[in-house]
Image (tube, rainbow, N blue to C red; front, side):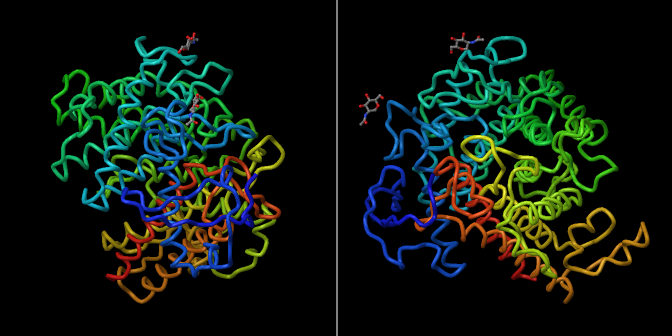
Length: 524
Ligand SMILES: *[C@@H]1O[C@H](CO)[C@@H](O)[C@H](O)[C@H]1NC(C)=O
Ligand SMILES: CC(=O)N[C@H]1CO[C@H](CO)[C@@H](O)[C@@H]1O
């Protein structure tokens, strides 16, 4: 277990390599020396963000085979992304399709922000991840095979880091992996197009190869399997899940676009388009993800029905942000963007529950204005990072709440949209504005015009609300900015898998959206 009071030197080694910042891994580094100045948490909030952003980015790179100084190349294949370096209690020394796809996306954002200047080394990493997935897709495994009709093997959730199949008992299949991989890889291909860059990796060779050999099999998997049950992103329950469906929908939408661009077989394009239409209708009308009985999204409707769960889950927030990474206004293509009332209400309901559920949040009770809380995965969680006892807050859930609000503010500002508060999103806004009129008249709405004084003060308050989630993260990282999976709900010390790649990626992404939201709001 890693606790945030440990003393580790935070070494800045300026090498000729592009990776200027090396963060020693806690479990293997001897205690060197420490002083108050070394403690990253002693910085003011803005300075902490700058430093934590670098540590977080390096935290992702440290967990990728072929480039990390901390990984043995025999144990971790080039381009494989381990979930965590932790090999026991818990053993996360594997590559999960989901975690890898989500965390590689941070590297793609990094390339996008740099507009390809000085980031050739990151481009190579992204391409080695894509190449690695070509091999993983073709491994027979306990979920099935690559070559059968439904491409069943693509539902395998995790692999050994050295690119061999994991043949033990597990919650499989998990059906979100192929869609997440499609989203990540196609976002990279779009970026190459936008900046007129080519594929550098000689095995992959071209955009066409990547589409035909890697993306297309995943799209076929989705079209054959979207109605089938599978384990959720937390690997615990088999059913249909919002996170899986909404990310599959995004993958199909992007898939149709690229299939058309590359002039793929018209029959295949039609199949994809039909699957997209069917899945969208399922999500909106049939699934039970957005029932009238609840103001928020239900992650796994079958578990709500059986009374086992409230349906509240940070998977919903993750599903929203990871199916809407594109800057265009695509609410019509894929519903439940961050501007959707139900997504915002999910966030407030999570905060409303966990503020009371986790003792470390109790000092947040009673504030008049909205204030963030440490968020876990879902209220009924009992996984403590090592075994089952009681659930705790997670870094990635807490960071994702912040990202949802930053992204919401960014989109509003960028589109110069009014803020409209109505019965669909009042749960989210009630801590910030007086919604009495909406409570009493069902059709009432409050319109706050873009650029008005109220608009400026409301968006500022919401920005501070997002920041309050990141301030919690600042309180719980260790002295050098390392992040595990969870932090204990009673005493706040970290626990669970050390240096979780996904924690670093989620926190890095939230910083990125904070910068974008801030720039947009400053223009009002
Ligand atoms: C890397 O791992 C292999 C296999 O476990 C082992 O034989 C080798 O000694 C390791 N190399 C280093 C540098 O630790
Ligand atoms: C059920 C099944 O087909 N399992 C296979 C998964 O893949 C490994 C090799 O990668 C096989 O040994 C298993 O039989």
